[in-house]
Image 1 (tube, rainbow, N blue to C red):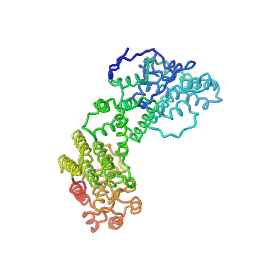
Image 2: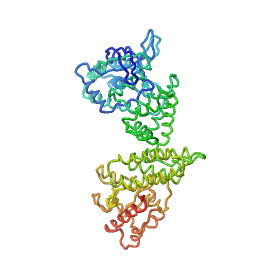
Image 3: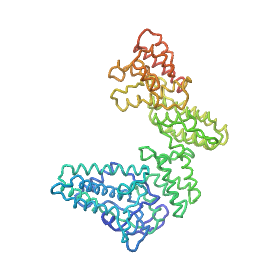
Image 4: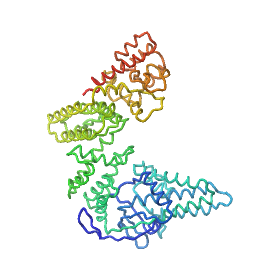
Length: 606
C-alpha cells in the first residue's frame, strides 16, 4: 500500500518487473491529458544511449506508474501513464530509428553480393511490431499513444498521410531526440559491412528491449491524479506547469469530456506561450509572472502550494484561474520578441499592442534581453484592456520608463542582480491591478518613476558605456562584444534619436533600416575599437538609400541623409561644412560624446 501525501489517502497498488520488450508486447499505453509534454534534452538522451544502449547487461530503467484505462478480453489492455512516459517514449523513438535504418539498408545495398534484403526487411518488420500492433480483427493500434500527431506520423507509422499539423514544443523535442539517435546509430554502423550493420542494429534494438522497469499499477484515474501530484514531493522532475495542468484538469470537473476540453485549452495556452522560445522553462516562468502581476509575489518553488490553496476544492475557482492564465497569454505571447510589429486597431477594443509606442518599448526590452519587467507589462496591458482607469498616454509612459531604465541599467552598464528590480515591478503590478480610480493609477506610476530614477547607474559609467557602442559587422567578435554591437540594437539606438526629433513615427520595423558608416568601413583596421566602427560614426538609413550612397564623402551624402530622415545632430552638421572628405577620429569621438549626453539627458531620460 502507498500513501498519497497530499490527501492522506491510502492508494492500492500492484507492481511487477517487465522488460521494455514485454511492455511493448503485452500492453498498450497512452499519455493522459494531465501529463506533461515530452521534455528530454540531449543530456538525458546521452545518458539513455550510454546506460541503456551501450550497457554490458540488462539495465534497470526505473519505474512506470500506470492505471488500466481500457480493459480488453482478447487483446492487450491500455495503460495510462502517470510516471515513466519520458522513458517509454524515448524507447519508442529509438526503435523507430532502428526500423528506418533497416529499411535504408534494403535500399542502399539491394543487389549487393552476400547481403540479404529479405533479412533486413524482416528485421524492419519485427521492429515495427514494437510500435504498432494488430488485434485479431486486423485493426492496428499504436503501442504508445501520444497527443502529438507527428509521433504517430513519424515514429509509429511513417506511411501515414501527413496531417500537416504544426509541431509544438513537445513535438520539436521528439524530433530532436530522433535526430540525436539517428546521428548515434549512423556513426556506429558507418564503417561496418552491410551484414555487420544488420547485426549491429539488432544489438542496439536488443539492448533497448532488455532494459527493465517496475510497472506500478493503480486502481483508478483519480489515484493517478493524486500520485502524479505526490511525485513532486518525492523529488520527481515535475515542472510547475505539469503540476498546475494536473491540478486544473482534476479539480475543475469529473466529467471525462470536460477534462479533455480543459486539457485541450491548456495545450493551446502552452503553444501560445511557448511559440519559438527555446527555453523549456518558459511556461513555468509565465505562470509565475502572471501570478506576480496580480497578487503579492511568491517565489517560484513555493507557487504551486499557493495556487492549490487559492483554488481550494472549488471547480469554479479552478476554471476561473485557467481563464486568468488564458487572458494573460494574449500579452505574454508577444513579450521578448525582437521583431514584434504593431497590431491593427479594432473598434471598441483597447489593445496596448495597437499602440506603436507601447510596441516599440516591448521590442526594446526584448532586444535588451530583459524579462524581469514582464509582470509590469502584463499588468499594464491588462488594465488598459479591461478598464478605463488607465489612459493610453499612461500606458506609453510606464513602458517608456521601464525601457529607459533598462537601456541604462541593463543594455549599457549590465548592472547585475535583478532581484530588487523584480520586486519593484511586482509591487507596481499588484498596485496597478488593485487600483480602483484614476488617481490610484497616477500615484502608482509616479512611485514607479521615483524608484526607477533612484536605481539608475552612475551617469559617468553609463556615458562611457554609450561612447563605447560600435558596429563592426565584418569583424570576428567575442560574445560580450557582439551583445553591444548587434545590428538590431545599434539600429534601435539610432532610431530612438530620430523618433525623439519627430523625424520618424513610432512603430518602425527595424529590419527595413540599414546602418551607415559615415567614414567608410574600408578605411578601418581590424580592431573593433577603431573610431570608424564607433557610434559616433554611425547613422541610420533605409536599406535602399544606403546601397545607393556607397562610400561617397559626407558632403555629397548630407542631402540624402536628411531626406532619409537620419538624425542630423549639431556635430554632423559641422562635418558637412568641414573641408575634409571624411571626419577625423577626433570629430567622431566628439560626436560620440555629444550623442551620449543627448541619450542620457533627453532620449532615455527618466
